[in-house]
Image 1 (cartoon, rainbow, N blue to C red):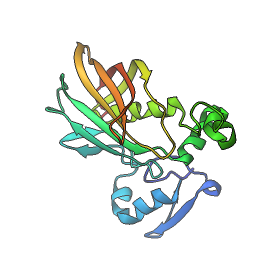
Image 2: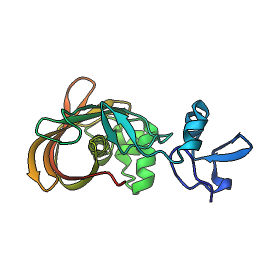
Image 3: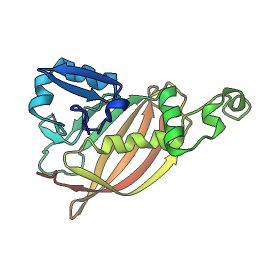
Length: 212
């Protein structure tokens, strides 16, 4: 089965959203965004099939250039080879209506508060809001910005305020304790573009070395 050379997804030819020809070979893509990335530097994806690592601030991160996935990340890590207290990562993204509807489809959480304007207008919020678990998912996206392979052990969350559809959010994860054995305790916080805290908590993670 053909594989999207950008994000590594298997793409049945009949399901491909986009295709292109390069040096006499056909390539199939999961989205037009992946095709655009390929077209910008085809030799990169042909010579290194399914790139799965990126370099940022001297750290190697396991982040695929997945065409549909939007957002920006930033890392503040003193030594990428030895994580320590104070190291932090941030991930920022606008939560769109399309994100909300795809999340509802993927999880089957079809609560009308998130999907139906008429119903949501009659609630305490007065309008549709983003699923809380979709919001907290930005923490996972931020954790994936640490060098290594981050594995969730536990997460405590406190939701401070609702998130409106179309808001831009920033998740920050900061190491506060090295628990040894490649385990770390972190603070996890998400703020909106007005610098208001929408979610606060702590997490414990295991960070393995990246596979060779």
